[in-house]
Amino acid sequence: MSKQFDVVVIGGGPGGYIAAIRAAQLGFQVACVDEWKNATGGPALGGTCTNVGCIPSKALLQSSEHFDQANHHFAEHGISMGKVEMDVGQMLARKDMVVKQNNDGIQYLFKKNKIAFFHGRGAFVGSSDTGHTVQVSGAVDETLTAKHVIVATGSSARALPGTPFDEVNVLSNDGALRVGAVPKKLALIGSGVIGLEMGSVWRRLGADVTILEGLPTFLGAVDQQIAKEAKKAFDKQGLKIELGVQVGDIKVGKKGVTVAYTNAKGEAVVLDADRLIVSIGRVPNTTGLNPAAVGLALDERGAIVVDGDCKTNVPGIWAVGDVVRGPMLAHKAEEEGVAVAERIAGQHGHVNFNTIPWVIYTSPEIAWVGRTEQQLKADGVAYKAGTFPFLANGRARALGDTTGMVKFLADAATDEILGVHIVGPMASELIAEAVVAMEFKASAEDIARICHAHPSLSEATKEAALAVDKRTLNF
Ligand code: FAD
Ligand code: NAI
Image 1 (cartoon, rainbow, N blue to C red):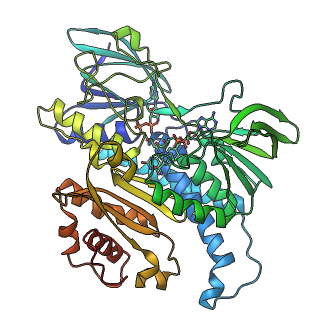
Image 2: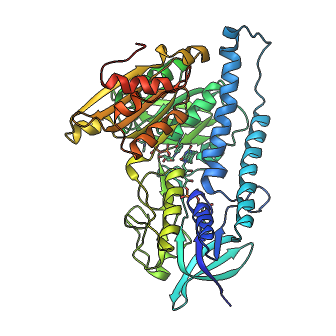
Image 3: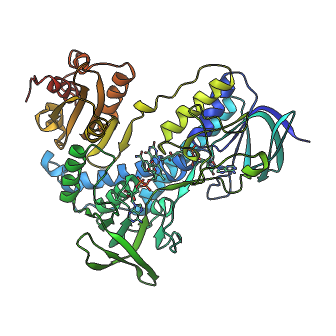
């Protein structure tokens, strides 16, 4: 006998669990199915983000940043200490504890919102008058039916053809977060977000890190003035990034991995490494979902086809997050989850794709919202630019981190903010002001006229807005 719900959510990552909570808040009877297992086979709600993505990577970035500070920066403050050592086991245990706190937090939220949770894999069986039916197999075997099903099955790391992940020598993001000792030599393929964040963790801990990138441009999606500034900082840190390479044979042996590649000059090179992280993008998860049973359309990448409202081609089935088009970001998945639950309730859920912020949690951090200078040029938009360096910001000097800048791009005629790009300390937090400003269609002058606390990094944001009108006060 199938259990009837108003809404069944398949996937308990940021897209799915947030959709389930919002639907429950709106008064629906909600079930969520998720198959992720913790080390002992129990449920581990939170998906990629909580288990092997956003949360554990930020935990390791924090630990390695502390190590780097103690090694290289404490002395400037007059703090001396003996030899600084890193207990990688303790660092990983702390990371696991942070992950578990988040897993448990979501289970608590499900109980609080009376969401029925089913631990197992969900697969479509078919549709009838009572709704769409989902078979759950795993820790529990159940059949669930609902008029509305939200698919939030997320994504998995893309492997290089012929080089599967073994998570010992060739690592995806999963294995990269479980390396038990600092590798002497670490190779990464792909200098995107994961490559830079994971490369930074192990570089700070002392690994000799080389990142091989296929494209000739560093961080091509990032405003190039910001990307260049970031690259200078990474070069200084000893992060070796080779652009425009063509990766060839990869051999896995007892002593590690060798990667043969052709560099940008056309020379053949062989790189030896103890471990290889492959971070070349991610693929949507639809394996085992049996989308054909309900006639759900997929695109050529395997993503579920949706319209701007996350509606699939099957009435009553919705899809959100990494399994559909758009940036693969946790907050984008969450926004879509909320909007879909509200649309099911007959409300006007809305996601503004123009104001989704991006953050790369390296040191310096890189964060942006809106269009880059190169995009505005390509779109033929007349714009004004204003930048302000952290070097001229009192709080940044006091912090001892003056790398980078804030950059504003505003419409030449109306002064409306079109993009804000930051490389520097706490860029991840500073970008929120720019998102709010753009959401409210603020002009650069609006930000320039707002009182910002002194001394704070946010004064650099105000000064960059002033710079659009060529009237910075402190530079
Ligand atoms: P997921 O989080 O992938 O969750 C999908 C869930 O569905 C999983 O639990 C999966 O097991 C389950 N599932 C799949 N199929 C089935 C099925 N048939 N039945 C039952 N359950 C199923 N984004 C950011 O915004 N900020 C960051 O700092 C950030 N850092 C990242 C770092 C790394 C290393 C990685 C890999 C990603 C990072 N991301 C970050 C991206 C972010 O993790 C994803 O965008 C986000 O998790 C997508 O959420 P989702 O709900 O769509 O899918
Ligand atoms: P990515 O798309 O960010 O970067 C992949 C890089 O690999 C690109 O620069 C690409 O040109 C390169 N590449 C692809 N194929 C290659 C090949 N054969 N040889 C050499 N280079 C190749 O993907 P990544 O880093 O795997 O991350 C996946 C996604 O996860 C990100 O796009 C992002 O959406 C999300 N993420 C977000 C984070 C954040 O918000 N801070 C952190 C980590 C991941």
